[in-house]
Image 1: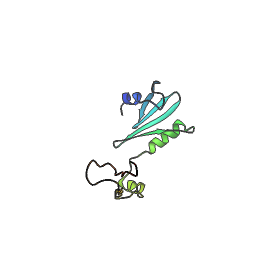
Image 2: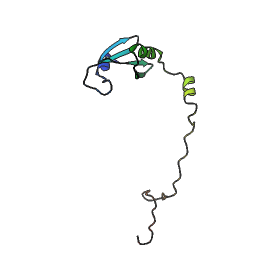
Image 3: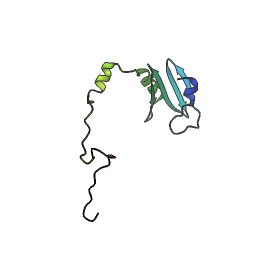
Image 4: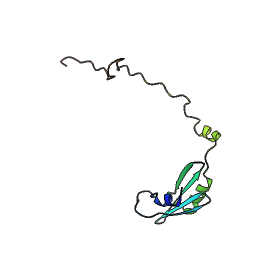
Length: 111
């Protein structure tokens, strides 16, 4: 992230209104028309923190300071319910073993 890239990145639904960017301790503080967000770049990962429901700039900053790239142990825990092997493909039963692979649609009476 650079000052130019930060300022060029639009905030939400208004790409025309300029964004003010300041950087402090690796956190890019962004502001436009009183709306705030932070961008944190850590270990090659960029995280945008956007407050909703009336979140203050201080609350957004606190969340930004807590951002970290998860360790392999944390990743294992986060994805512990993810299947380790991909599911097998479903056999359709209506695809021919040769030709163009189009489904078999036998004609009925009159057609």
